[in-house]
Length: 295
Image 1: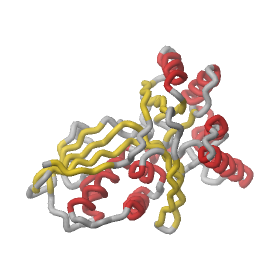
Image 2: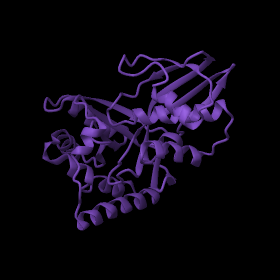
Image 3: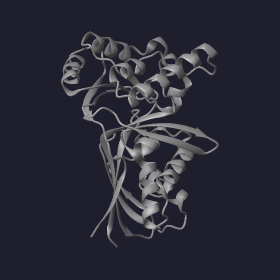
Image 4: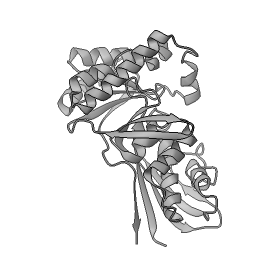
């Protein structure tokens, strides 16, 4: 058989106040090569023993959830998406599995079908929508169905990603969020998200960037202990840069802007002894997940 190669971008969920709704695709990739059929599933990767090499691997589990009749294959996985750092590492595996199942069995799943399958697996649509479609997506998820709108970030936009050395699991991150929120806070959060999307559609990035930073449920959940975010945001403001937010549940902090401003910010962050982590300045992904055959 011909080899199948799937490439899925990293993603940032919870952009600004778009909790479980707004997702952004980043120019870091998770690649899976589908090779020959085998007696048992075999997944070659360099993630270490904590990530399964057999049918317990998330890619394989996703393939079999989409279509349990698919025969075992050997898979080779290569990735520069860090694990459990708020950059959609599990989403990339799920998106790859959906794409592979669709290709192997000629299922003709539409893009909407693929997003809905992934949303049901994850319980929210923001990461999977941006992983499959690329760029920035705005989603609503209810009763197992996702409604998604694709949008376009400014052409010159890049992301400065500060990856914290502290590992925050999804479970640990979610435990920090309040179980209930006040009505007034919900109104503030939703209105900021609405203005962000409207400004983005009008190509008014200056206004959109300020809405990214409007007080959010994410920062409320992190409380006063999230010093890294405050230091980076304040440093960015001193340079006239707005658009800093917490990606996912807190392992990464992202600042959006153009190359010149972000390189200056990166230098200041890397020379700040208060911060425990590393920076990556990367482009946004505009294409989403891709799949192709290779003879």
